[in-house]
Length: 71
Image (cartoon, rainbow, N blue to C red):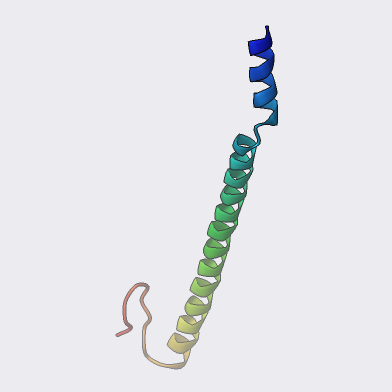
């Protein structure tokens, strides 16, 4: 019975596992926020280039194409 109590006491006082879980959750949240920010900025940049391309096409005879240089 003493052996079981010692194991239970050690398990209760052990905090390295809990700290590892907390850091894993924090890392996951940071990764999710970073991916979300990159996707948002990418969408904004795409919109800006699309608007620029439309403006240039309206004012000049250059036709813009996505993914390549205008002709």
